[in-house]
Length: 339
Ligand code: ATP
Ligand code: MG
Ligand code: FE
Image 1 (spheres, rainbow, N blue to C red):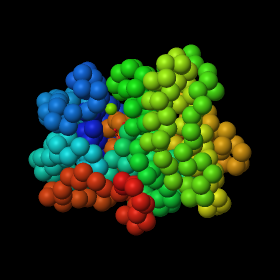
Image 2: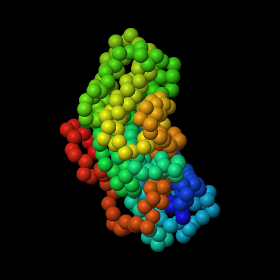
Image 3: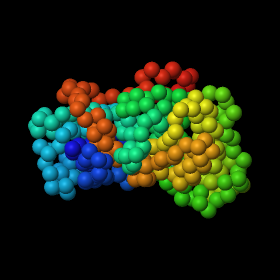
Image 4: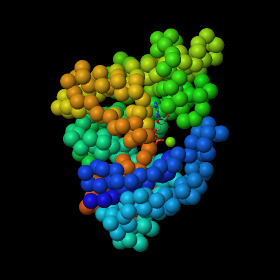
């Protein structure tokens, strides 16, 4: 089994070939950090153009790296949403053209499902069900994963995503873009208890998240001029981790039968987050799993893997790109929350 995966939903252009056992046969990834850095965030039009320039040669390169051609692929899996629509369209339309030309099934992958199943790509022994903390640039959710396509959302954020909070904190501290890795780096030299910061939602009986107030508190503390960037970064990171652990504790109360705790999405690359979750899992007698950091942030291997998990299915060539696409369409709406 061999699946070609294509990812272009944000600012990583990526292509990968993954086999049925989860071996990454070949992969290439191009970050657009340099293009967006002057603007302090991802500019959708610049992103779409960069994907359009890079994707075709990248796919050709990945096939060449593996010494295969499209005819050897059992499916072409591409992110079809959610994300910046221009970029998603570039990847999805490319996948459609390749699928049509090579008479290969197209699998339209939900980018969030790519993140959600990525722990199984990294470690095939992770079985269903599992409790999933999905923490990325656009999402902050706790889900119960019962199988491929079976996602029950238990919690979401009523304002900012966790990755967004890291990015905004980095901006306040003048650490540049992308912010998450910069905050983590600077926090290493700081004291996590130096700056008193709020833990929004902690103690609430519902497991939802909120990070806007934490970010505002970081801004006020920064403007007071009383703290170093390192102390601010470390204190922010600690406050965020305390929130995540508290919220997960509540959510896990309704998942008694679940034995594995999994974290995925860009923020799962953060060592302090991973260590805290490992501790939480141990407290609950649960197994803990997190993909290697390179599979936490956006990549095409996780999209190809979602294609492997869905092999046998295929989507029509007129399937639309979706800017929004909730993993759990039945989730109760939460006041103030996005998807
Ligand atoms: P989504 O997956 O919700 O559509 P996205 O694809 O933009 O959003 P990802 O690529 O999964 O998000 O994750 C990027 C986010 O992860 C950014 O907000 C980034 O700051 C954050 N991030 C990456 N590495 C780290 C880290 N080491 N520590 C904290 N945050 C990090
Ligand atoms: Mg990125
Ligand atoms: Fe992502």
